Length: 441
Image (cartoon, rainbow, N blue to C red; front, top):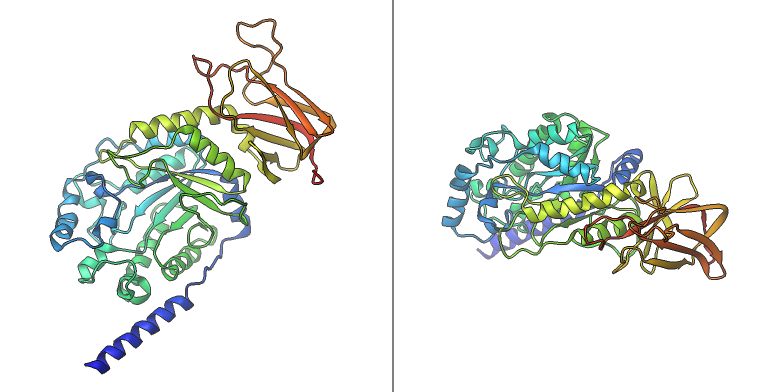
């Protein structure tokens, strides 16, 4: 008996060492495709599975659950999942209006429930009262709006383990693809389906527990389409935080709109649109992409809090979209509460003034130490002509720009009426033409 236990421990150690040896990140993304991805900048993440009906954490409730819970989760929940108010076209139009350039949809989360039509299992959207391929509808709708198509996929599969009679875990060797060959083959077949059945897929986000599984699936993707960009699994994808300093490009920060990835009907805390806008500015100024997550409810609708927040982001992007077209980070990310992006190949800088309060018609003077104006320097504020202050004909709202001993001095007034109460809590974007970065300051 003791000898058998020793052999078991040795086997587990060998498996563990194999996983560790295969735990290196492999990146076969083409440099030109990574550059293309970095230019997208802003994307919509969507987490959605059949357990949204219960308003609980997506998938993870299966770990440590009782046999009775798992039986009802696997066999009863799919029979009541009918998101008959789902409209992919509405989602796609909303994303485009907000200035998003790509979507990443959860085709399968850790629970193993496939939100796509698959031949590998009956645990999928086709075997629900809804009975239609949600993934296809999302691909068609977002592609029609000109957005790039991305798939989230997890090689962790709790349903597969349940069917095998293996305790559901994300840590035990037999629960991972490296220690479970049938699971390894199963997830690769599903990845081949996703890469084959929906036209050209631009982006793949692999969210498995172990790097081995993500690398194996990434290889499948690159073999089937060398142009596909693998994000998580091949590049840095910080979750729910933004690095203090820029990372080597490309990279992608992904955030929830609330606390939870999937929709939670109560006890939820949503970010404001202002929070999201500031994150977008900070991430882009550091050279990263911002992937903002939305969680539809059990009927297929975006909760009104998420819709309202996205609407406000859309308004801000409608005004300031120019600052995100063909721009790149400056050598300096920010000065105090001013962030920067520059126009590629030009001496044009966009300065994002993130002020706590800026009353309508108030002029503010700011000095930027690291910039210097050329002889043909010009200044303007995105979205406003700076010629008229409503109901104040004697006021000149024109911005000014000049070099001083302390740096580049800009004087700007908020003269564009956005809200009825004339209050505007979001950043103002100032366009500075013919300016140079001064590394000595």
